[in-house]
Image (cartoon, rainbow, N blue to C red; front, top):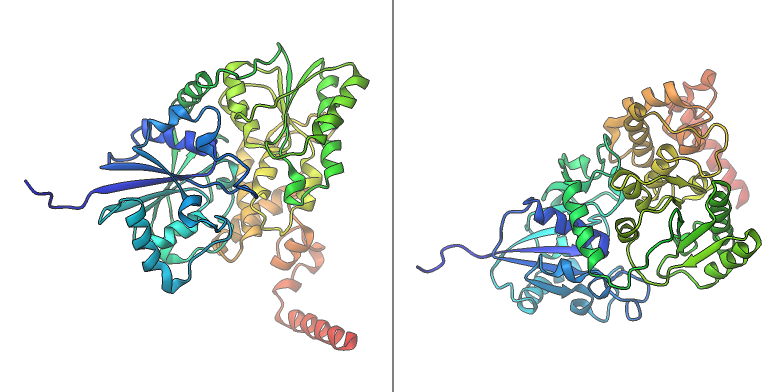
Length: 447
């Protein structure tokens, strides 16, 4: 019998081993219908992809390969352009779609897309090139709990059928893509842990951590212009000191794969002063594989997703450090790292055990994230204003004010922005006109 309907090809896009493992867990959990062909499209978004291995070249990838019929490279398809910078001109989209269908042997296949970070390139570019293809989005980390970073074209957003995510913060519902009423579905934790177990056995050189070691997670925040290199080195030193104060005499540092070597040297100098046995991991493996292989006595970081997998999935003790100044420095206010940093500060224990650093009660966490999400993206989520007002009216104070910029609250007319007796001003049309005239006059005088 001749085939009467086109084949279905699912294209799964991933840029990290963690994301690919999440996809494998979702496939194992039958969250995707069986297609005719399943392709993994690899993005290498590093600053210098020519010198940085892609996820399919990293230790532990091989068990993931069997989940797909083929592994393709987005970087190869668009060479010599960088994945984070290239987007086609609107008039060229049909041409590029035909090119990709020919290059990847898609023919007239019905294409279904599974994307991460759909609000930015290269995922957004892929969604735009395959016009009309249904889209599933999956969360590679904590950012899904925050609002969509940018306003997405409805021609893309309305095609998204669901958001798949790991239950990193039990009880908290992701906000990503809720402006399009996209429902969230949890990828079963058991399936994810099974995949991680398979990855761990595939890395023969996986280091074994000493008993009761404190594992320090580096994030290379200076590369994001959040901290200076000197400040980040000092943060790592504080991590070590905090771990020692908690009784750990053996410390393991897992640097970010692209972090400079001097970060390790600064810790080695401090370890000698403290009389600590320090191990620096040179193997670029997922922190979760270390959790799988050996149970650290403590996991320390700033706002790494690995802190939440350690706590929620592996029941390991974790602590955060450096989140408060980080929240103050994140720019712009809409920075998508804000909600992950808020969650780390609000949920995880403070490494230095300072007073007034108790965690936010679980019953208040949804309210907090909703309020932060509204202040980040009020134009995308105007319907969240009442919920933000309720939360701020009840909870804004010494423990929570670090999560909000007073200037931002003032501009939005929210509680906590200005003295209560002047709260009518942001909604007063006359007051707004006076302010606009004053600003115009000030600019005229400067000229």
